Image (cartoon, rainbow, N blue to C red):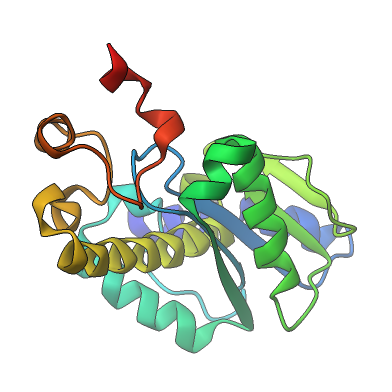
Length: 206
């Protein structure tokens, strides 16, 4: 019963938009604002609301194995989804917030079906003509945003695992570019590679 209520609660914001006359509701979330290396990744997804996938939540609260299973289900059931990335050089050039917003616009532009509104985790002002509704902690509270967060994280994690084959000395496959002790020690020992965000590494200059 509790699980059923939890799933129903995650449709609260979607139901509000349906009641306001919106039909196609997208969710959008980013992964990778904090890492020292790798791109920021955004997913925008429009999920059917009459065929709910159980277990959708903030991607950080779900195990890697379960995320991968859910990601496949999301892709199969999605009305439309789009995933975009913005690289390290752009992040260094325009800063992580602007890079995230740019990545979000790219993800929205990539949707084959235009939604009536997009629910976003926290961010509200984007250069798009699609109405945007920001929801704090939206990846935990909205079914569509949760689905977007899972696809974005699975995609970025796989990208970082592939980078680790090219640069095994950093351990990207373990920490996905975040500033773990192991990662920082590697940076101090051998310096950054081309996939590091130099604007995030000012601490190395001390």
